[in-house]
Image (cartoon, rainbow, N blue to C red; front, side, top):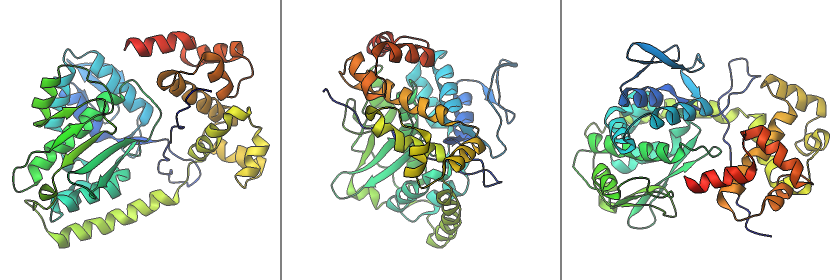
Length: 359
């Protein structure tokens, strides 16, 4: 058997006010508005994307000002595919997005006493603005690394999203830190998609592609630099508010996310029955169905998502044959898997793999 990559983790989002229906992974609307503005468009509060006075696209509106992960990624993909220069688009986004746009977290980041304290707040509280990715601060070596880790399934726009995320954060760091500094380097796991020299100019430091992790490398000295608005008392007051908000997020649990984490590793043993899964999760089958219904889902919906996500990962990141991937995703016959995959994605598995290789 050939290499099988680890299952994709999916983070759960905050619950609705009723406490019964649970949100999908989501992103604060500030990120989407900044990207639209970077491309010369406007994203209105009602979800309408306006270009040249015309509504060219609409996003489903949400009362909490957030955007579902799939809607956000599709919007980014739509924008970047119509822009003549992706590197320039990343630069424009970095110049526009501000920590002020992300509410209390932005203020806590700016008022932390040092850059290290700012990044510690980014690491701990990033979930209040999105659960599609996390930051992890590694300070045991020199340089230290602020690692960016996606927490959703694959999407063609994620490489672009990752570049914008690091460019935007690094640009803001240069604004709220009191003394100018230069990162040791920036690294991305994906391959370079344009002129490498332009990325070095964009980030103001060496940029490595095809690296082990997506990260900003900082010297130990840079971490101790003071912030312009550093005020420990104010920052602590704000972080207390963030702790309350984070606590409410962590108390919620999306059954969809739990099921995806549970189902994916065991698909090679065959498609599980809902009753067996419910027992393994400590639920009755009736409760499982009811809670999934509260989220607008069925057991088949989540099972299909787990199979589709794993199949795409294996086709993209492994050298497993189509027959092996059919087995690993719970199908007994390659032909049945191929028909299902084409129904999910609109293309056959072999064509999907060819398209990925061509990109």
